[in-house]
Image 1 (cartoon, rainbow, N blue to C red):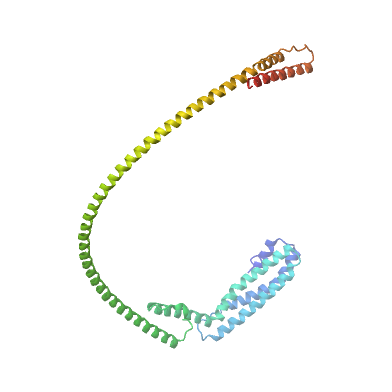
Image 2: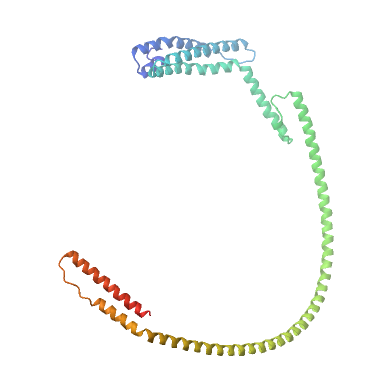
Length: 331
């Protein structure tokens, strides 16, 4: 790999920092990158394919720990160098990330190789859990209460056997209950038919009784209506007599009221006439006053201010004249 292709060199170039800072960072991180590359190549050759491959799992652990130490050292160096300046910190982060991005996938790969047995065991338990859940659900067992992946085979066999027995017993009980239900429904249907026939008989008898009662009610209705008609006739005659007496009483009261109102109107008209005759001289005096007010002759003035005063005076005299006329009419 040439210097131009080196991820550290590319990161430094993109950061646009001074040559001095670039040289310092290159010198600081290059050894970590070189060590990481060496262990990456070793890690790529490690592959665990069997639970008996203890040597490969041991090598995976060793490689993972070495890479972890490199990553921890890089992070420590990054924190120390980043304090110098913001731009230098950006370059440090970039270079550190290059190495971390190189190491983290390898660490994850080696972790899987190191824990090959655990992963295979988890896979086995997961598949076993799914298989057992399917078996139990077929016999209507709620599997949420059981840790089926970790349950020993002997314990699961007992659970499956007891659950199967319970399922079969419940199924038999359900079938028996269904047969009893059918028999009960037949007996109830027979009883309902008996009740229906009995009800038809009682209904027929009730209809005959109702016809007889209806005839008796009709006869009673005719007699009652006849009695009511006679009573209404008497009541109508009594009401007609009372109505005639009421109208005569109202006529007399109306004549008396009309006479009283005519007398009161004549009295009020006489009083008003007398009052008007008494006020007539005063009204004539007030009308004469109003005419004199409007006939007052105004002096001939020249200034604008004086003319304004004359105009206001005319308006005020006109209003005063109108006031006197209006008030005289209201007397």
